[in-house]
Image (tube, rainbow, N blue to C red; front, side, top):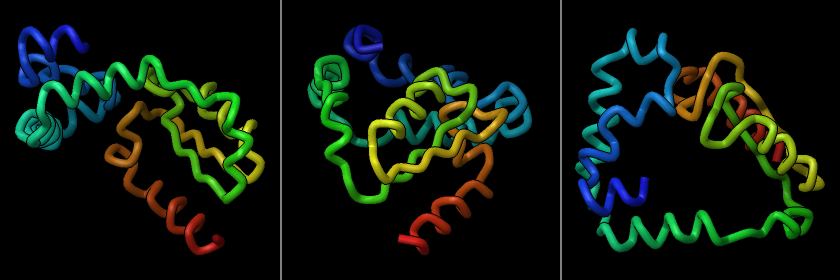
Amino acid sequence: WMDTARTAGFAALFSGELTYFYTAGYYDAHPEAIARAERALVDVHRPLHGFLRMGEALIAHDTWDRLHEITMPAFLLCGADDMITPAAHSRAMAARMPRAEVHIIPDTLHGVMSEKPETFGLVLDFLMRH
């Protein structure tokens, strides 16, 4: 994805990439929302060099062994079929954080909050309790 951004630009990178964010059913049922999301990803001001540095940091930065240091309540939300942040990874992260709770939402990918806006209630509940 970094090579695509570097050589072809954001329009080429984000066009069609949302298939990793949303289920096929959501994609088919909400073409206007998909088009808006793609436009927003392309139109937002982000310097290419900053985007590429972010990608490099995603690859190189590793604080896995320090997750136990996060002692405040933490909320992890993940789509059960997320390919970007797999549910197993979210569960493993939560297991390393002493006060974490993880919510895996069935039949969703990375765009869980867009596909299932009712899951925002889980966030509100968490905030109210903490």
